Image 1: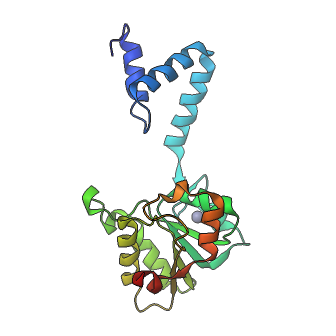
Image 2 (image 1 turned 45 degrees about the horizontal axis):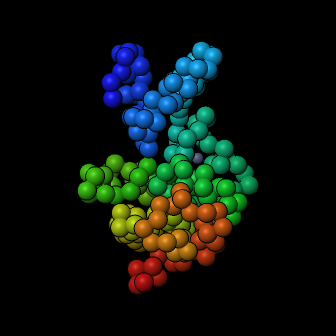
Image 3 (image 1 turned 45 degrees about the vertical axis):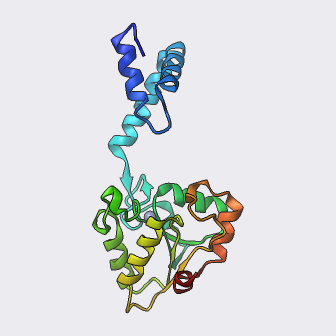
Length: 205
Ligand SMILES: [Zn+2]
């Protein structure tokens, strides 16, 4: 792509670094911004900068939060004995949207993937095991995507939890094998949470 302006080229390049945005889409977005009042670009860049500089993660569940403890963890209405383990923040949002779950979450920050060089120590697994040893948790729901990496991560956590008096379950496989959790519709995801099965049962299938 030939640009008549280095400024334009730079802006298009930065925009095209975002996932799902190719060079052509990046150019369209940048030209769109140029047609809008300058304040809109200022608001966009300002909100992103503020998010980046001040974002915090809940010290209990690792969800994005404006405060030390997120709203979900701080709520007296939530069942603290039930914890749903998810890959990332989008999964918390997806499950919250189903209104079917009243426990707390634990965000791992990804899943074990030797191919991508992600080991257990890169994820928030150690703090989960520490929490589990605390005694307050009665059941952990593994709600990772049903992919090979998700299954590997489930099995690793399951092994680390051995000997603790905690029930483990996985969400029912209403979701197609290989699907990413965030793309599931709310009904399927909600049912999967309600019909969760003991993790041992999922190993035999
Ligand atoms: Zn939290």
